[in-house]
Length: 338
Image 1 (tube, one colour):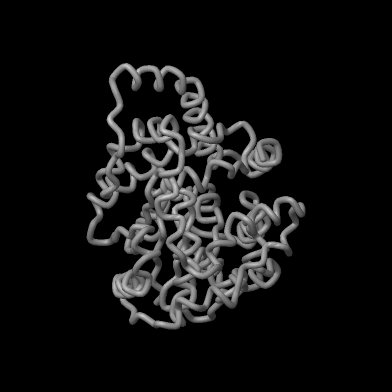
Image 2 (cartoon, rainbow, N blue to C red):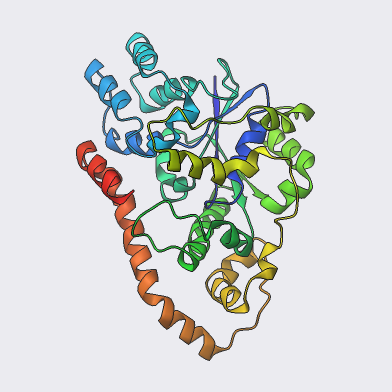
């Protein structure tokens, strides 16, 4: 029986690196990002059985969202449809297992003991994971919010969503949710700090493997250096391919601690904004603030950022709700906002 685990984190917290490291284990299938668990899980949440028509609709819309990541999966839709028609899964958990095992990219394995999935969007859809995989393990990966901001500030894949400091502040909301989740479900969760993953990689991987019920394999750390995800087969533009390769290229490079503490070179005004909104949650994970901010300065910062914060909250809510819309309308929105 296949066990399942999920890497939960805010974006740009090292989830691709951890996923690639775990994929080097001979008994772990750690797949690249996708959104089908949310997309299909919400759309068919009330279905108690599936027909051939359902299977065709699911396969046809599997990459309706995040289509730019399809290439890394190297998936054959015709073969997947044949598998579904043959096995006739009647629950979404069974159906999802068929989809996971259809992964044919780097590190694919026909009979893994553990399947690991990751997507920053899962922090907003934890109920979907609990509904279909209530016994799954969760690896909560957290990174210093100030370093994360430096990493994410020039990364802007979406139209209309505020860039820069607003996306940096989102760290607090995402990780507050994850800390609450960990407190409630600590038996099935473990917290991994990005900084420790970098500086003590073997020990952290050993602890994660133990958490997953597996033995640590020393060679798993080197796998990602020789086998890299290829996004080029996707039906996306050259610019999008280059964007993805650039965004994830460090996760397939030798591990170095040179990006730990890079926030210390940032302007004080930037750090003030981040610490104002993120310090309280950050301290729960051991990240201490570096500044004392006056009440007056806090008020000024809040007033200046309020319009973009409101915009960000509204657009984030719309994005979450959009998964409940018909596939055709979702496709229209994806094409319009991407």
